Length: 172
Image 1 (spheres, rainbow, N blue to C red):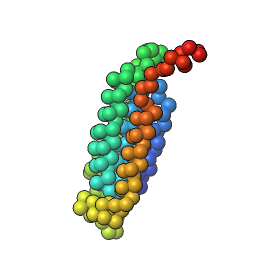
Image 2: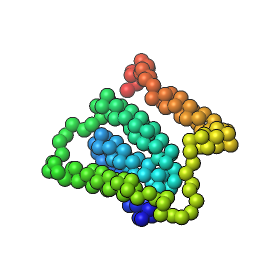
Image 3: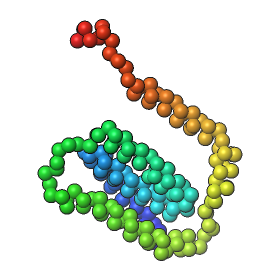
Image 4: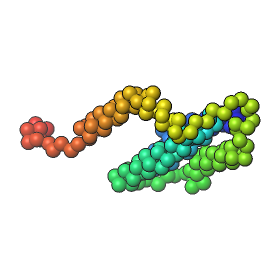
């Protein structure tokens, strides 16, 4: 049963991501991406990583997607034109994705995936995860943190406001 749920969630994640990329409305694209992240969190849980699944929901869905929505709303990036198709057809993909995620979540809640397999339990607690992350892999964590710092500085440098000089205005 767990492998069937895994493949269903994989399909839901791919469909949500495809809808996110092809959607013209940025608010709808963020909502589709949130659904994809929820499906990915459930996949992590099925793979035996409930801590990473919780972080997926807290960090990506709870923080980053809210930030994306805030930026979209502040910059008013949503298109102004009204769609020509009927209203219910716009809601069908989102409702299908949400319903499939809810059904998979309920199936996971009512059936423990680790109880079906008689193998060893591979769940790792937060303490063991933290010891591995900041002990054995401390150098990799620092390298990634510096890469994120360089990316933030580069994004600031590329996105900063640069007033036009007088010489450039005269030449155009």
